[in-house]
Amino acid sequence: MLEGKALVDDSDMPLKMQIEAMSFASQALDLYDVFDCISIAGYIKKEFDSKYGNGWQCVVGSNFGCFFSHSKGTFIYFTLERLKFLIFKVASSSTSP
Image 1 (cartoon, rainbow, N blue to C red):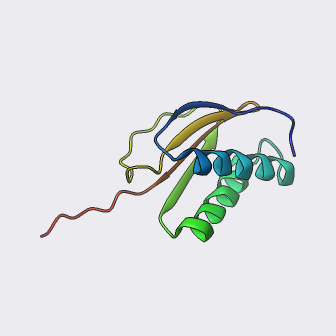
Image 2: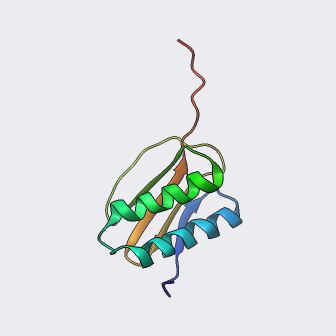
């Protein structure tokens, strides 16, 4: 695993889930080149989908903007190495036609 320490910028996840998010990110960085952000994000998404059910999203990069809705308790934004990680579960919409 990478020796670099993650820095959480913002989160509403439980602490245990935050630690898992950073661990999955570290594992992904061990498996993939730091420039292969798509594979890194895919790895993290699959791990979260497997452990916590489908609907997770992951964005990885060094420069991006975003605006999204998420389910309460499923959001984290952190930095590890030179990359930013945004992980969240899609908020379910309950609108009717």
